[in-house]
Length: 112
Length: 113
Image (cartoon, rainbow over all chains, first blue to last red; front, side, top):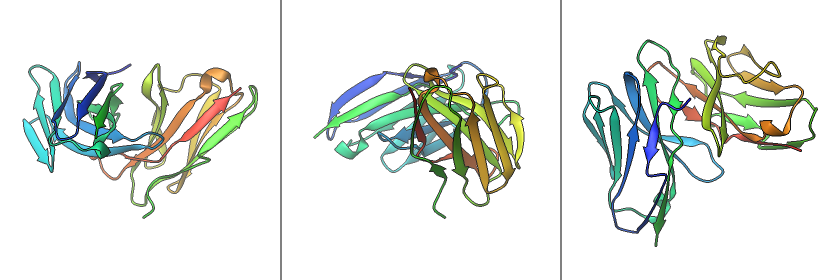
């Protein structure tokens, strides 16, 4: 069963605009991770945020985590056509298990 | 390191046939995961190994599915007999430490007719 649920399911923007994707989850977590998947390829890790962190940056990416609301957001600033991909959040539940549970993803299209 | 290598990239088979998917993990990994991805159900964890030992196979859908990790350099996922509803992309992924990111292979696209 899905732990993380991304919102929106699909997002279409123009190059240069910012893209925000949200993720909600149900149980307590050790960490939350965001991944990117280009068509026909495997998932690529973008950023990991731990449960005691509130915000993290990596280049044009900014991730926030609100454990009280069990939600996270991924912001891509100054988007490029090459950012077109599906983006997934994944949660590692508390309790020592290494099982990462993925949401169904947000399909982002950046139009040139 | 070439990353996680999966083979074959594509597999088309007829219902009832045995299918074997292969994964060569990155060196230095400690855990290996098999996921299945479909449009309807998204990414589902099938089974994972830690130090070559199966830890959790609760996601394996039926007895038709089995997975092995005979050594640190190789894992297989077998479906016998295959059915059309097994059609999906199967991913192998590894981590090098707890609380660390997954490294995915490019997947095997399985079509069962």
